[in-house]
Length: 109
Image: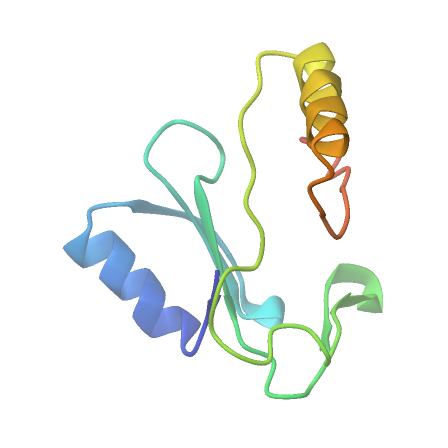
């Protein structure tokens, strides 16, 4: 989720909601939380306020044009295997549901 203040949001979700902080990426102003299911069940990224953020290796990880206001960044579903994922994409396409992109995060797709 895009949030106004990543530190305040991490504090709320961890202290008030009991979701554990798994990792943070200070340069990206991002934090990842888990309820014990996966490496991160929820990710929080601070809005960009019009400034790009560079990640490891100096690559632009968050363009200035993304995340200009709080809200949903993206959502993912855990699937049994890649074949189920392919079937889901086919179902989405057959229903003519629009989506912006698909992403291969190397640990997940």
